Length: 297
Image (tube, rainbow, N blue to C red; front, side):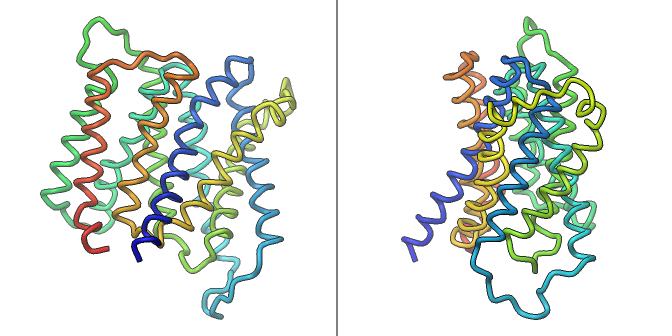
């Protein structure tokens, strides 16, 4: 049992770390002159192709008759997947204007936004533990984004894109945990990625017909699709059943420090002591919110 939990923890940590690397790779692609349209389209096209190939060659699982795919269920997943496309667009636009360390902190506002969404949908007030965790996250965000420093000039465009990314990421997390769970995990990921790809293609349709650089596919598309759309779903679906949602959510928060460290090492982005304190507070809040679930698991 302990070995299974350890194995699951490694899978979840690797999945979260993969997500954490994305923004740094995107910034490096921007540095080579590629656009948001080129980055997002190449990631989702190659990611969808990779997952599609895996579904073709993977051994079919024995699924009960009641869990077989239906057209209505597929449409639901495709529609839900549009939030993945929105998250990528908004997040990648944000890191054009703000450091990756600030972008990932803004994206993680989805943690407290999920609490509010849960309260609205289920018409149930959150417990004291969750309320305390939300205030800790907000306090940590003030530190981690350097908002307390009057000398810093805040790029409100990047800040706005970052908050929109958090909103759409909240929708993605809700969809991933609630919509058509009877589908095999790999197929769920495939249909949701397809939804994201359709949304991105519609948004950037004019860019495809003008100055789109197809060099992005072999320069950065393979890396972005591997770490953004192929590895994470596979690793999460392997790891989460072994760890349980509570412990899995705690381990998945490793995405924040990984993202900041990658940006610091590869991009040379400075990270102050107070920013690290803010990040630690956010991580502690995630632990606090999931501690009861972890015990139950």
